[in-house]
Image 1: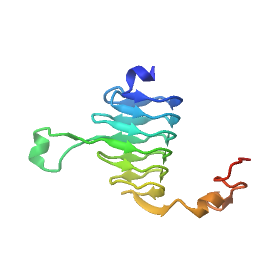
Image 2: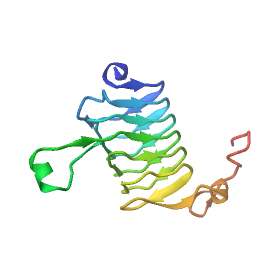
Image 3: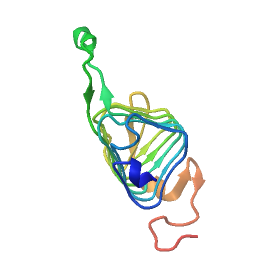
Length: 161
């Protein structure tokens, strides 16, 4: 069914319902192995591209449409649409808002409740409103899976526990 209603979709894509899309997901392009939690909204007046191996938290909004600040333009019902691009292996927390024209780089993590108003580079953790990079993903992420909770294996090694 997803192949019929989306712009494109890879293998092993799960979208929990309810989900909302202005154009029935026809402007949304999903890579492979994506999990999209419930209550996600796609304001897909423009194109939305989501890379392979992404996870999207509940209540996330992808908004490609925007309205200018100038009152006369708004009175004239002016609307603009800019694409949203999410790289590969990105994690987006619950309740995130992503505005028109934003690109999120590969392997990045966007914290819950963030409002992403500018591009986010690859391999970082970014949070807040407006969303900002707080750190690069690095050595501490090889040692701890959450705060002070240590891993019992090397995630870059060949063997998993």
